[in-house]
Amino acid sequence: MPHACCKGATSRVYWWVVGAIRWLLGNGFELQQPTSQAPFRCWLLGILLLLTITTSWPTGTFAAPRRARGLHLILPHRNHHHRQLHHHQHTRSIETTIVTLKTNQTEGRDTCTAIKMTPNIAHLQVAHEVAKNTREAVLCLTKEWLKDLGQNLSQDIKAYSKHTLAVRHPLDEEVKNVKFQDELGDFVYEGKVGTLEEEMPAIIESLMVLEHLYETIEFNHKSWNCFFNNFVHFFHHNMHEALKVAGLNDACNPRNSAYNKAYIWPEFGAAVETIKVLTIIEHKYEQLIKQNL
Image (cartoon, rainbow, N blue to C red; front, side):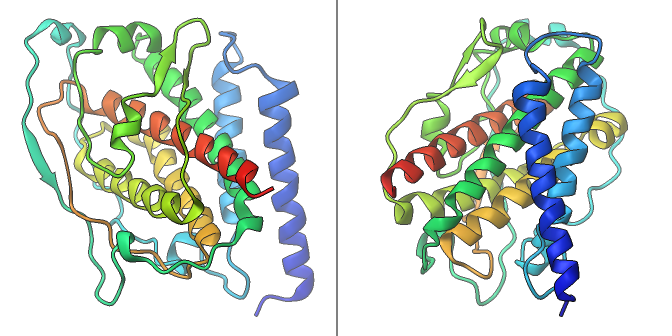
């Protein structure tokens, strides 16, 4: 068992980091303004969020959240070779090849659709904060990744609007209703929200499917190590908080999924899907908090 002073210090660091993130996203920096400090903002935000992850370990264990909560769902990411992408390819005819996306199954676990929850309503606020902050970080890092490639999020959203990664998960229908607002440089979503018992299994399973999706994509070395590996850490943190809201001590078994293997730019498609899913999750938590006031 960790010493009481250690747990107290961990808690103080955690809330200091959360406070720093709030300041960074609120008063300190405006993420939508393109300035020379943009890369610094993104990396500082990423570091703060990763510090939050490492300081939010479950009580009574020294293990990281995904290991302690049974969230070690993927092997260490393989070393991908660089794959040249010609961005003019979006002018080609649209191709669709739907293939199965297999997910890891652990013996003895319930499926995500059959989990028996003991809801922890008090934890909704923390889960909402994590979803909000990680969504902002993914958006920021995606913009910086595109900038590094000489690309632009707004232009690429339009250029690839007729292409779809078609990832199947419980929130996939709602993903279709997440819209990119060019004037904001951001995604927005408004939709109906059910009960906590209805929403949490969908949130947990969708995050797990996205994590498996990232194992199928061949990121080049720089894209993975400088940008996208952070996204997987953000999945783990969001799953950890979602499980706490659901009152679960372990993960569930997600159903096998599917996606469009012929999607013209998988890295971009995965980034956009991630932002959209986190946008939906942030909205759902916000509404669930209002429902349970």
